[in-house]
Length: 272
Image 1 (cartoon, rainbow, N blue to C red):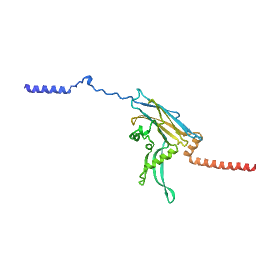
Image 2 (cartoon, one colour):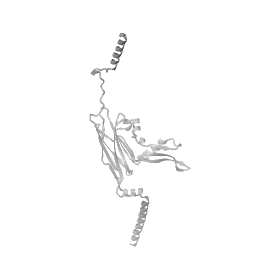
Image 3 (cartoon, rainbow, N blue to C red):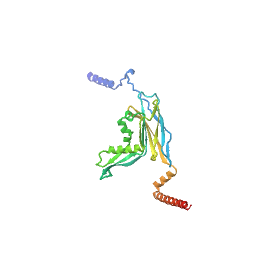
Image 4 (cartoon, rainbow, N blue to C red):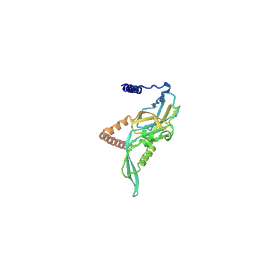
């Protein structure tokens, strides 16, 4: 009768030893390395609204800011990328071909989302500081900012249409690639300026700042700029959009009045 009791005691003792926690020496505990403090971007603009008047011939916006840290800068150097993007708009890009001695529209590609204005300013060459994966993710470069392309089955070179659109808008000053124009002092303060052409479209523009380290985006910040017409230009623009019939009647009345006024002036000059 003793053997079963001894076996039961041994089983209970083994179960208690397995369930008991094992304490490790303090010096053998694994230490978790502290994560670096996050970096925060602080952004400022010389103006947050651009007014387009009758004599508007372009402007310039100054973008400046700083990298806010709780500790000293990391050993790996960082770079800054700044983008200014106008409202997206659909646009149809057509390719012309010479047929029977005349130029006609041939293939067409529809781009559903293309920024009406887009500028990229960097503190170093873009290809050197930003990886292709991060560019695809954040859509920073000019070709990546253009998306949602649709075309017919006969079009096999959609990239050529995108390149043509970029060339046309670069000549008009609407697309700008401004590499190495961002001053980045002591890995903390940054600044740049972006010229705005006279043909600047209206709308809400987004200004994005990217802090890039080792090819990856470490931190971002976004703000907005409003570009709009003011005064008489804004009233006429709103009238043409909201009251098309009234705008047409006003245009006809102004044309008739201008013609009558010019004829009266010439008649008075002849009588003198």
